[in-house]
Image (cartoon, rainbow, N blue to C red):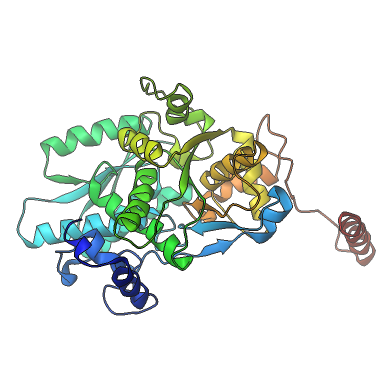
Length: 410
């Protein structure tokens, strides 16, 4: 930080802004356009990048006005990335460093991770790009097929293990202590160095104006700390004069941070997470718990939770206004609903919800919702197809009925 402080905030703002949209290697990446703040000493030739980042900051005007009475609501679509999730931001940094180590003839035979889906996709893609073996530990029958097929397609050595994520995490830590396999989970700080650039990017996209709130889904909890670190660095280096308040949103079926927060930050208790549609955050013993608590305390942060019905309804509501989000974003939107209803977030507050993965990875959950095939769930916002005979009169009848209902709604 002392070395970075030799340059003022205006210098850094101008430098970062000058690199947006350029194809000059490696600055076309949203991560590596901030190289001096991420991994400054790595040679450009060692960087493994798919020009990740630079993701859409979506003005959710219709969703905000229709459901929340807000006109300054934004969704940061981090899932619009190379492998369809925010995990690319951290993985480009970690795999680049491994690439550097291997060129230095260090004893690293491959890279391994435990994953609930998205981490394995990012790891396998970036390793494949660099010709580095990747080893993935996945909990059997607990991730979507779209997530499972990604590491398989990218040539990873995939182990499907009869346990949950926390069990996979325990095993990979034991294995990497014995074999020269580099551990790629988010307890590795290189991951967080890349992920923090999404926070810097948000400020950049607002022309260096600071939003009031940023809401992030939380599982292993590295991301909430990474966002805090990105905002805090911008404040300390003079690019902005304050940081936003942050909210960490958890699924009620996997909510150890929420319970810790509600207890007044008393003794943290890991839990056995139950099944949730937000499968990437189905984690009961998060490795970054201490860093997350530190970040939330420093920014006067809040932790909220979402039931399965709440998160699926929120996802459907968002999709109905033109988005196509993942269930984890539904968790974050549920937190927003609750904080708006309690008056904690004001209707005029500029609020950013972080969307962590592409909705196409979770099509089965959307199909089940709109088919009303989820047990004990009303699926209030489902929109199933209407079956109709191939007959002009029959089609006219259903269209007239539909158009009449739309007229009544408007």
